[in-house]
Length: 96
Image 1: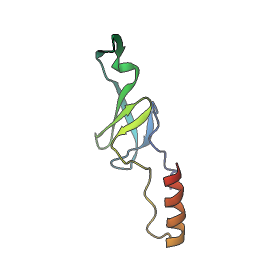
Image 2: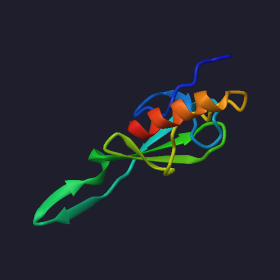
Image 3: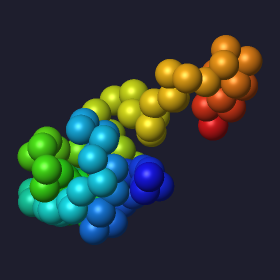
Image 4: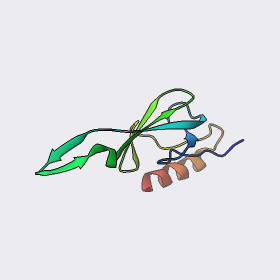
């Protein structure tokens, strides 16, 4: 079984947060300009979209972190794990 690769900014492949398939990602820059407080900024400097080559769903990135889908926490726990292992894993996830 291949290792899970969590979504990683600018990576060519990772496990999609939608379909969980280890798939090629197509990257897009968000084009646009804005003005805030008198200074201008370019959206492409901080915003990116990756689209899964398998399921075609987008992942939206802001400042190199997954913004959408919300609540993505990586691979799900195996159903065969005992409750004590599930509890430990859940506690570690919450501490991140």
